[in-house]
Image (cartoon, rainbow, N blue to C red):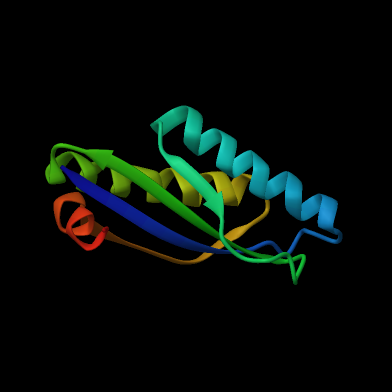
Length: 106
């Protein structure tokens, strides 16, 4: 079993309040969950209205499937952000091997 995790840094220049920021972040999170069946969470504290960091995780028995899914997630995320007046500043992902991670847990 393999786990892929992605980290996304967003800049939201159109946000002029916390409410604007929340609308963009919530919309992106909901759309990604619905379309790809991935787990999405906001990772940073709300310090600036015009930035956000998201974490995205997916699990599968196939690394090849996850590699393709993460590429599609990144493409869709960029398109969604553009539609909502945001910009993907940085996006990176990596594999975590669930078997190795479970060995570290007591």
